[in-house]
Amino acid sequence: MRYKIALDKLAKKNPKITLRHLDRKTILIEGNSTSFAFLGNLLLAHAEASDCGDQFSPDGAGSKLFSKESTLGVYLHRLPCNEHELKGPKKK
Image (cartoon, rainbow, N blue to C red):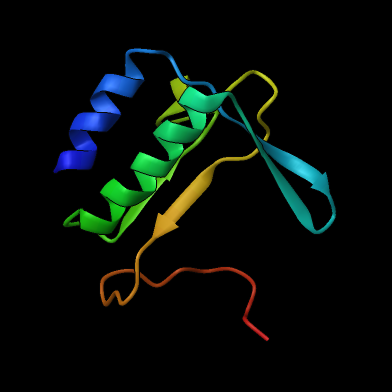
């Protein structure tokens, strides 16, 4: 809950995060100090949330958090989870 309060305060400062591919194996996360404080508190708030999953996208929910240069979104999924089965590349 304390992180939610911090998120609300930081959101008023209009944080903008850029999330895009830097190369084939690296994702770039770019922003100013307010943006990184927001992102850090977002992760901490997710750790305490009742739901195990949350999604933010430059073209959808949470789009105000992303800069115009963002080409990727983010899906946060806390484990263990019995409610969601993520579909994607199989782990090696």
